[in-house]
Image 1 (cartoon, rainbow, N blue to C red):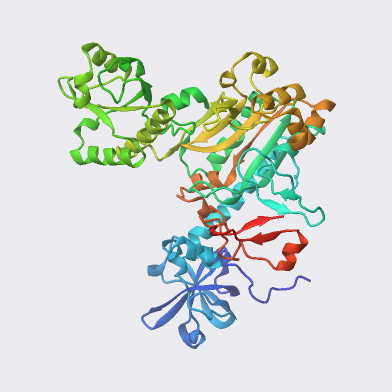
Image 2 (image 1 turned 45 degrees about the vertical axis):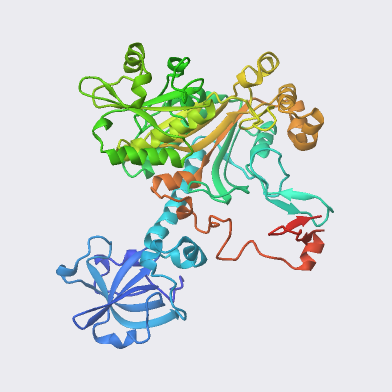
Length: 596
């Protein structure tokens, strides 16, 4: 015999015209109490929706009841008056006539905010009372959406022949990437575990162990500062790895899984069809000023440094000079140009030069006097200038010229409303450099994942300058967001030793820090490759939220604090002693430092 739930016989979404004249019991939160011409109503909310309850002859049941009380209500289902139909909810044609009401949970404190408008409150207040914030329909729907996407991802990976496996949470500290979260060991004096920044080493070891296709909805931990598209502390990724695979095999899987996600959860927007466009890192930095280009923006950057090698215009002489043609901008107001100038100064530029193209194809602007007729013709051809266009100039060293040109490209396109917000533009960024020059030491360091396979393998490492070595590393970018990062992994000890040697590590360092992979590669490691989708960031994009914390149930705030539970917190002296930690405050140090 199935026991009937004493709190409810139906959830709100089940209360339809099929229930007419039936007695039902529902339970949830009082979202609203309304008085229409002497008849009082409750809007009762549960996880599934909202149903209207009319008190009619039993208004006394509402005595002492306030919004957000948790109640159970029993009564008969009847039709609403047609003039009060609500087509926005599934229960919009019916209501429940209350016969009894039982309070299950009282509200004994003043609400810190109104639940239906909680998103208008400060983020810290919302996070402190996150259990209330998550009752807000938009926030609640965000978390439901997240659950559905993660379930869909799991189903797609299983369809692709991948096996769901787990990797440890207690791991070892890595010298590469972001800061680790360290955990002191009680049993091993002076030693520390670390929370994994990613399942990188373990998933490679799965491949060496003979597993063919691994995936995991993995939690990763990085002690990084928060941004709008990056949460402090913990984040989730769809992580997968394939044995006996190269870059093309990984791309093929991603180009089936990601379009399926966009098709089902993209809100009906158009999206790039597979195979996705491939852009080299070098091309992306030149044409878009970023390795995360938003291809909905039609503007492209061109290099015109050669035109100003001997220029009399000092700000351009000897500099990398980039230009951006903005079609139709010449007609904009003086204020528009001033706002762009202010933006340029705000990002660290010393100014923002430009010329306008008038109806006679004259170049209007102070830079024109430094141009020869040949320069003007060359600019017309290279920048594809037309009447009414504006050509912006950005000059600096190579790194700043790329960065500033990319920022100006994005800003002016937004202000000109050139970005199509109703589609998803997807591309691969490929051929990342394996090494870059450290700004402080001038020596080579890894640019991305140190476990990647260099293109050309050992021969490239032995014969090319470090800055010329490319890696089999790739990112998938959508609408200016990096959603996926991955690589073909190095599976050879000789390549591993040489690549780390170039980055300043000895073989002894490798054995000490990465002994597991180093040893595993000696025992017949297969070629393998993989990637990871950033789940939180992807959901943020699909829901068009401005902050990643809007799609995570219980995130840390922008200052890496858990305002709901109070973390990080102080611990007792006894707890510190057990893990051999002494906390002391240095003179002049505004904080604490943990030491052995």
